[in-house]
Image (cartoon, rainbow, N blue to C red):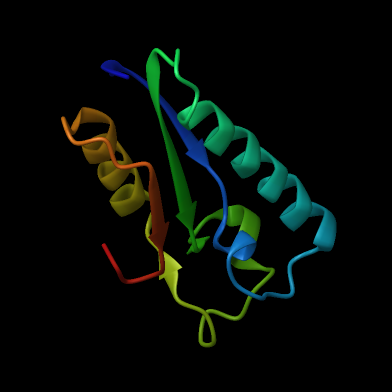
Length: 103
């Protein structure tokens, strides 16, 4: 796989751990991941495919959905810098799980 060509797939930690997120969301994320794993292992793949499973990101979308005293959140800027590091890295990391406060 050519490190100059990278597909970054933002999935969700809900695919690997229990949560109260709607089942349809989790199923769609799982299908996306399954497709990506197939592509990652294709013999003729010309790009890197990196699956990133962030936990809750502190955005407007989730601010009213969850109690911040009960859930750890990732800061959007911190997550963005980490994603850029993955893209620019010469090391091919195929999957990453991130929980709030880990960056």
